[in-house]
Image 1: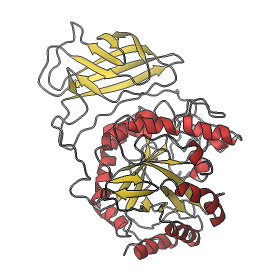
Image 2: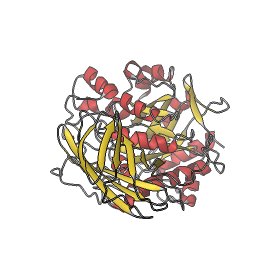
Image 3: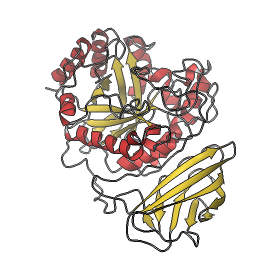
Image 4: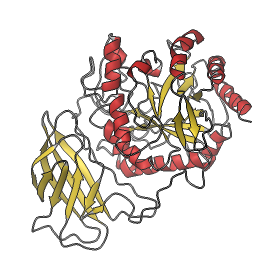
Length: 489
């Protein structure tokens, strides 16, 4: 959905600096401290160069000398630095202590800075080592699971032909809801989730006989950028997402992680806001942060094949240009796109970011016109070396492609070749006659769909499935609830 509730929205002035502090967050299991942590930040950036910094914290025994290393992904080159001896070999950058700051006691931190060049993309490094030890991960890592957590029943998924199947090869349709909040609460400084996400609240979703829940996210909150309150950013945000994923899986529901709001200033046709920060839906993801977001998310969940990745909520490069070919080329390949003032990350860039981590999770790619247009999806579909690519589609009663004639002509050919999922279905009538029609069309073809949204908003502006987080449905939500219970008794 392109317009979540705006009450209390804290819009940042459009004149803010175009580059905030991009920090690589620290990720740990509950109760476990990492052996070391490294916070990486871009403190300023210009056309061909940038200034960066690292803050290193030692959480193990005291050391008399230190060396931190990381890899650049986009050809960045360090030219000089301070508070450390900086060197670079290929993509690997190393910062070794100076004579005056080599001692690093347990719990102590040291910072160092550098200048570097960049071109096209300046992705944040995702892995750091201190004296050869990997930082920002548990000091005693748990065994890597090959299946979902033992307490959960969500199936491991992959693509077979034009179907989603589980590890035993059985067809799996994803039928459920969206749980909005993670995309907007953090950037508005109001929390992480909109409403409760405790076990009882997640069980209420499962009690509708939902087997999937889509979770919209915000890239600036996940990456811990400086414009986000620390309590809602970085490691805290990531821990909240991981906890919600675990709860969904524990109730047998497939978690679909959706990148909803992103960085990049767009003020053209159909702009949702003039802010450079991730405070609204942008026409396409940005090259500066989105590949780093997906590299980090994929690295976090690649051991759990029950988790599905929805690469970008609702692309609309077609609103920035009237040329359909240009819009689809932008959608696939990104770069400099007509009418969009920032460097775009195309769907191929995002697939590559996920697969570059070794993650084989199912990924979804929505088409143009806020994911309502799949007319040329097959022509421009990104290459996925794992073959685990799903076409994503959104439909509301007010969309252009919102009738059986359009579905038969544009969706059916896509669904004949790849799995097709309606990541959002809904209507703003506070009734359910439209989604009843849509669900029947999808049911007849064995396709997946998720209702928007499991939040207690006014159904005409949301639209909202529930009036209370115990699962009490709105008149609109009754349609989805009763339908799910009828087909999943």
